[in-house]
Length: 335
Image (cartoon, rainbow, N blue to C red):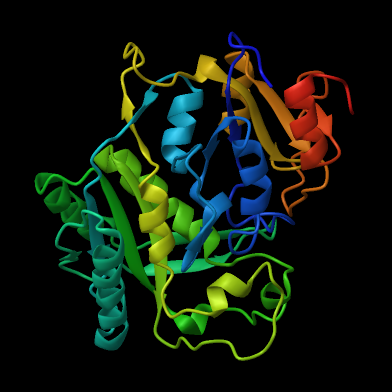
């Protein structure tokens, strides 16, 4: 066990849309993060635990969207616990009625079973227009054609007292690639990148935690046996529930002078896939004396390794998540 004067918070991150071997599918990094949460408070990005109908979130986790993660590690904000969550929901006007009704039924079921405080939903005045595709690296990316209508809907929910927001945009099924690789636990989630773009954009503009789930018109329950890593997304017609579960563990951004909150200097380590180190998150963590650990068993399509970035002397490389946990708990050099 840790000594009382040691830092007791770590951050376990798997970026979305990069084809991560662990965490690139549907909540498949959850079991790894949960082992860390038995010993530490663990800051996770939604991609680590979101799994459509399910969620890997636990009491010792802090659910933090990527934009606010960046602000946190840059020491621009602290994170503070929220006691009363009021969740707002935005629907893209272009979602067809049948799919919209499925999502409304989902909201009503969540409210009935869990007694979550979910505000009346808002439908955008205009279609959002979401495009998604793979970039040159093979990672997923995309565009929001009408971001203004999303912001207007978000401002309405803020005026209703929302502390967090879920966004559900219509995704054109015709743009989907053959998912035969993804369904077998390989390849890249083609919609993951633009989902992150929507969440980051809305969180930045509204300054409250915002997360996203896609809505597809041609959805069916998968009847074949598929790879367990992808299975959570093929047993449901909606990916919305995991957002509600995760947001119950979201913290709000506050000024760094707030003493009853978590500061980046309280974080013991930032844990990332081996070759997903190319974000400002890494440099900001290092600048704030947070250990950055790259886990070799988790690779992606990015190839942003410590060596390629000239950070071999700054980043700790560890073979597996198990050895990473041992290193953080007991301090020996297992590399």
